[in-house]
Image 1 (tube, rainbow, N blue to C red):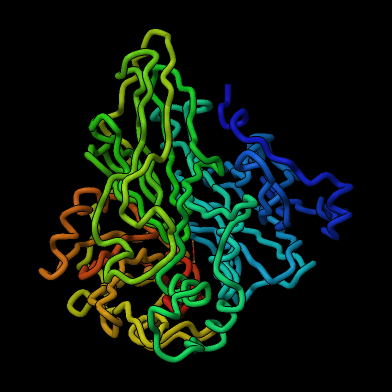
Image 2 (cartoon, rainbow, N blue to C red):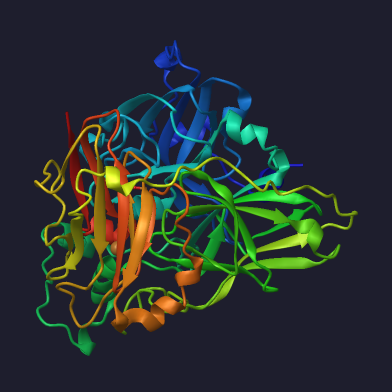
Length: 532
Ligand code: C2O
Ligand code: CU
């Protein structure tokens, strides 16, 4: 039995209510996706869903419809659609914007041409459509997708515009990993609700002021100014935290599981919150995959850090625990989250780095069924940094803060611009170093960042840490998993992380940015340009 199907109750928009809301109808001409294996239409629409008891919560969501392809290619039983494809399949996806503002979808982690990648310059107006067509060339893995309009990504993702894009391939199939009801995707997010069960996000007026040029509006900060507007402005820069953890859009999430091996795919789709995931009984976690698919071999960790946009695939054998017991996946306490510097932020009762329960598993009564964890998963060639064109001279990207605005090497987002250091040559490899030294930071605020590069998977070459922040780093460092292919990497305060990137197949303009979405929306995002 598929527990996911059972666990989510969603009030869907029927055709009649869709018409009443002025939403676009399913298109008549949508069936022209000839020559593709899978054709999906995704409508970004306002909706209401039951999340907590009492009033329904207003959300923005993707309503999906499968126009071509096997039935399993699109699962709409949760708020977030789950798209399941095989490597090599040709996709067509039509996005229809039923929102009152521009939007676009980014396919996070996938290697696609730049006009298929969902850069904010391709945002479409309300009522408009965007046709995506691409072949899935990526390794089997847990990729995802989400809204990516200019300055509004945080707001739109918080409102519900995200989904999973799970790729399988023959290599993975040969391993016989747990599948079907034993393959459990868990999307972890934090939200704050008001008394009427509605999501609380940044104050819109403050958001507008921020995008209008980052003015502070009120001169110097003082304790008397820490009202709603100031709280919102600070949160707009530090990041939005919620005090309610949702898993697959459910609070207090729990699942009945059989006493056998499962594959649990975790996605941190939170705006800013990081997780330090561990079992409540102290058993190690067995990690089989990260952002870009399976690792070379399983690794065991006492805890795993999961920064915004990172994914981790766990092998969990529930048969190892007694029948009828409950196991809890928790987030443990850690230092170096965004409370660093001690300034007011959002998050209500649940600080970044505070401990809490993420998900419960109720283990069934039957006899344990034995399954063997493969010793080897998929081949991961060792990174070859000496092949990088700048092997002797890594490019440095400092994560900087100016007057209430984030940046990279002191520059904030420029829609069509890429500097010289951000220009790369097709077919080459480069080494980049993200430096989180706190350049330009105000009042000692140095925050963790979650650095994502669009359009490719990279390798992590190494990390170094300044002594000043070493104590906080101790509380997270054993949970960083850098062995496999990555598209997002946690860069802690005081840390420098070196990555190896390969610019293959496509020229064009792609993004790289912090995936703490309020950082991204307020300037910690730039383009890189791949030239022929
Ligand atoms: Cu998942 Cu540019 O983002
Ligand atoms: Cu950041």
